[in-house]
Length: 72
Image (cartoon, rainbow, N blue to C red; front, side):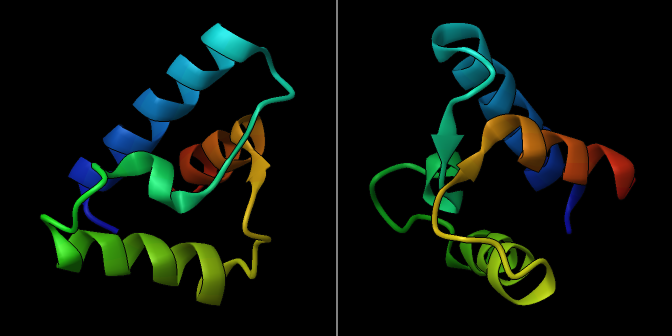
């Protein structure tokens, strides 16, 4: 996974957790704008989320952040 995407995921998770608490859930779409302006990066996130980790559609932001941080 590209460094740019890792940083974006951590940033979004931190923002969601700060706003809504440690129990907040999100999907991989939360890391992108509402338009498909970077399909390659979107596919990287989708593959990491669905294929690599077999995560549910919505997962806890804290879990996603921990997964990203441990894979560095």
